Length: 271
Image (tube, rainbow, N blue to C red):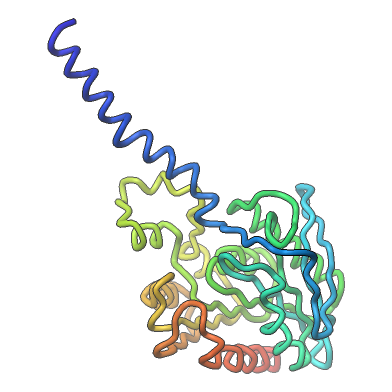
């Protein structure tokens, strides 16, 4: 074996060891990283007037969601949960909206909360669309959207594809490409390795409904700058609320739902 061939084989081995194998592992591990499904004990028990419903998707999955019919407002809100959460965790937020007279559907994603299937970007967007269509079949009133964190990546495509009267986004991101760069120092040349890019930045400009964006300045999961930048890409008139001192998961302690409720009430009245 010539010296040149030996050097080539050593270089090939090094590339496999330090590049191909690690990046292959990262690529296929992204499902668990992007969609960490929390474990649950027993069947969830909704309260506050919510009932468990099952939503069928066009590709054969069955989603375990929670529904509260509309009251005096006649309008309804789709609520998209974030990372490492399930629909049942949104009961408190949903009750604030139902107490204000809105109908509420707490959206569930495939693989979460005992629903069938495995979450993917295309899959959870399909789930969002199926949830909208289910809600449309339950009521003739207008529909709005409230989404947090990862849920904004499924909610915005729904708002683009379906008619909604308002969209509220909490702790949103421009894309998961940007979050990958922030979290792990991801190099732009390796963007092709991100399996689920969730390009909110490419969608938000096409939304015709009024938009509200809320972001905490101390968010360490999705940086405040992400929400701020997304607001600049949104249509003119988009409202951006900066909450000083709030993190990613404690917006409720800073009165976020009061802001959201008033936003939906105002936009519904303007219909």
